[in-house]
Image (tube, helix red, strand yellow):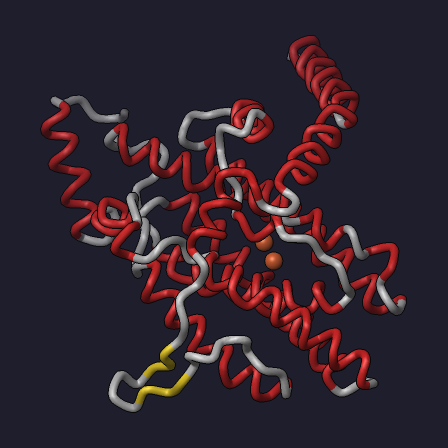
Length: 318
Ligand SMILES: [Fe+2]
Ligand SMILES: [Fe+2]
């Protein structure tokens, strides 16, 4: 808090900034609920980036060519970088990344449910890039205009990298779809498995979304879950046609009246089950994360020791 005044005066100033579409910065007063909402959302986003490294990391050693391997390594490293930007953005709200990681490891904060599905074929790396990164971009482009400055700025850079990710996924599927019959079948089978979970990435239908309204009022969320899901479907239908692959949705149909594609309803029971921890890979993902964290303890200790030595040296020189 930089300026004196009552909470009421602060609240009025905050509301005026939101109405004027101004950015809230870490130095500004903000309501506790706004801060808590952002910490929850940014942390969940950061966790998703680093957990999301696992399903694709699984294919680095088995990528079909040196070029594909190099691209995939770069992509997985980008996701680690996204996690780091986002943990830094969360830290500007007064929470430590160690605390956030503890909450993730204890299962008290979430990450995107999509990463609890397994990657069983190479085509899954393509389907993740095309559909999962594609859904992520659809969600994240509007966040570049969100009211909290550090989050909005992190999203600008992240979105540039996500569009490369989507492109590389599309390229993998495009190659497979034009390959042998077996490769084509593998690509189609993978799209069949990832289509519905990618629609679920936008969250429950608007009628059941608990956080949406307040987040919209705070200019954190700009479009509703259903609006974003529609935007995503409208984007991928022509892309699927270009790939020569079919989206496994019998209800998919252009509606001239709405100017959008109609589409089917995801299995929300499955979504709730995965959210509750009963997806195919929930346990495996968290266990792997905890192990990676424990095995990295020496790196954190070394970094702390190095920082303490540098400080001592600086003090001695002063
Ligand atoms: Fe990412
Ligand atoms: Fe990505």
